[in-house]
Amino acid sequence: VTMNSGSGTMAINAGGGAILLNTGTLTTTNNSGGALTIQNAASAVLGNISAASAGATLTIGVGGNVTGAVSQTSATGINANILTVNTGNSVNLVPSGGGSNAIANLAAVTTNGAFGLADNAALVVGGIVNTGANPLSISVSGTGSLAVNAGLSSTSGGVSLVAGSGGDAGA
Image (spheres, rainbow, N blue to C red):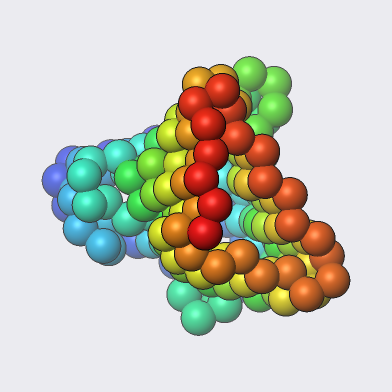
């Protein structure tokens, strides 16, 4: 699946079924808070996503309506200006096999499962990240820096933060 909405917004609504993007590509140059939304899914396997215009937000789940696990296909990348997540299960955005993510800003994240994000660019955590009693892991590789400007919460799952050689800042 390859979809390009140009400067328009894009909404992927599975109607309660599974989203399987695999190696497909979703692209928008829209620069709004509703640039690209993935919602109402039993689970989601993400492929290549680009919503990188200044102000563009990639939203995964609305009010926890992605009820199953969210993962990312090997050798794919997510390029987003702002990422926000609200799911009823785990989210693992850690590509393997040559894939890499470039997410500039992590806004509010709420999961009822583990949250893992591997980024290959400077990352600012600007929203509260809450995984309940599940693990929380954010890793920035290469020369990317990690700035944590909001709270991180994992009541018993543990929190792991790794910054690239660009340095890090804490909340």
